[in-house]
Image 1 (cartoon, rainbow, N blue to C red):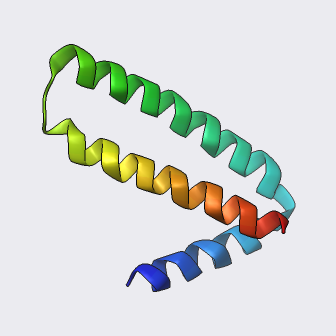
Image 2 (tube, one colour):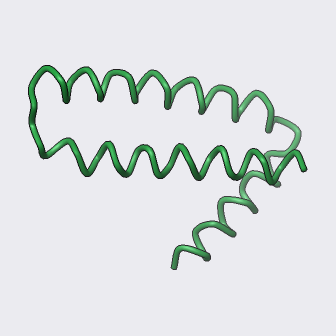
Length: 73
């Protein structure tokens, strides 16, 4: 299932190849803003329910950076 999702994301990014640079830059900036807000919320409220969401977010960020590397190599 993970490999299928990965291939679908690669296919989606290849479809968006003309807009890929702006699209990925926008996504990475958005994810950084959301990540910093999530970390601040986690530090302020200390709610452990946010921890899996943060782990999922970092996994998605790593996946986006990996796809960015694949796209430009």
